[in-house]
Image (cartoon, rainbow, N blue to C red; front, side, top):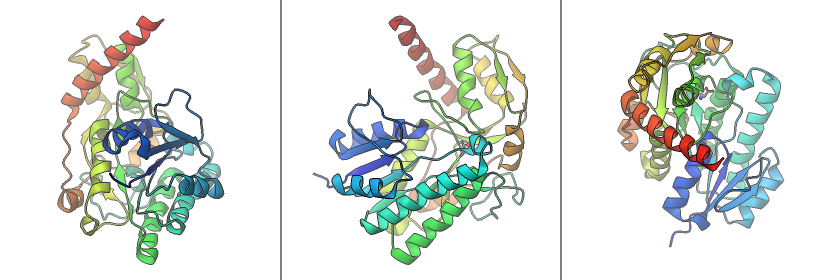
Length: 320
Ligand code: SER
């Protein structure tokens, strides 16, 4: 029997809700403690309501459940963060520092801290952006992630805390909805198509961004966390790539299934955010250090997204 007890913070979110199920499958329902600031009545498993800005509450929960690993997924994302910059900074930094400091004090074995392509800004080559490119983020979300990466390195160097991190591209899944991000369009567009609607896109047709299918994102996260400690040579955060595409390319791939599907482009304030991000990222370090390999491209992702969303919408209309 494993002694692993995992706390997931932000378990109701886009990634958290899917990650929790995979961790439960792998480690057993009783070994995963899901937590979020919002309660979750329909949750299957152990759930604790937690405000991650509350240091004492976090510490109590960790002691109560003899937690050995933390996945900290709660954050305000890029687009929403720009609506209230100081609040976003306070919240993202407070939660992240609470996690690192509580983890140090309670001798947590491993911590997962997600970073993002939002750490990059003007100074990069936007094609195949390398792991060690200069970071000058243009959003508060990106600034908080870049600072978090440095804190991760600091806690590792100074205290030996085993923090591991990925720079996620836009994550696309059928299981859950994103909220407040610049890459959210790439999930919303499938929902519109499967519901038989057209889509109004807040990014322009030729805005290329790095993206990853949910299955690959979850697998990357768990593979990174399960890799032998000595393989983890990057202690800030690893670039991981899945695929890159523009809104025009994703809509063409959807039109293979829905030929009449139409997208109207109406760029808004999120266009400026996307314009500073990489078009594609280089993940050689992840491949070399812990054998990262994505499996989905745009075509195979579109097939699964459409199949799964159709089933989901059929089931929910059958319930009504
Ligand atoms: N998906 C995130 C966002 O758009 C990027 O990490 O904010």
